[in-house]
Image 1 (cartoon, rainbow, N blue to C red):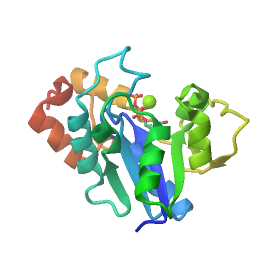
Image 2: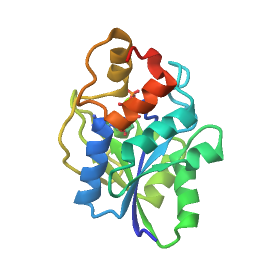
Image 3: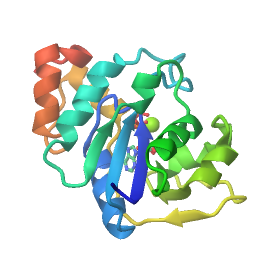
Length: 195
Ligand code: ATP
Ligand code: MG
């Protein structure tokens, strides 16, 4: 039974090397037994602004991404729960299943900056230690009323938004996304990919 569990939530539309490098480095730095890349079912803060790839496809992409990586797993708690995804709820579910575990909620600084817009964010801070990593770009302030563990990871200027654009305009994907993930994308013809 893992005792120190990292919860790294995202839309992962698609998962890329920025996610993987972050997860393995935070796991190492904080001696976590496992980091769960938790796939949001309905990312309610994003769903109005763009079309989101079906959750089961995104889950399979994350599974492909972590298959060969020690200590990283794909999480489907939010998909199985259904509806909108809330980290507070997910921590409650994971805590019930792992009563002796200590939880770490991992976010990039862009996500950390918006922490107080999350549903029941105080509960998230009560149920877990908050971990933030810097992302390249403008540096953003994290809400000062909470204690943040800052972990240094290699700064990779990679985003799912940029990758989705690359799939359609034909720019290279090499070294930004891993081959097992690309295989699934090709097979399912996701992202209007011209691969
Ligand atoms: P999108 O461009 O669609 O928003 P994204 O690349 O930001 O996608 P998300 O699924 O939104 O990926 O992010 C999930 C989590 O991963 C967030 O906490 C985000 O800050 C973090 N993250 C994403 N990309 C990086 C990166 N390159 N380096 C560090 N953290 C990252
Ligand atoms: Mg994002």
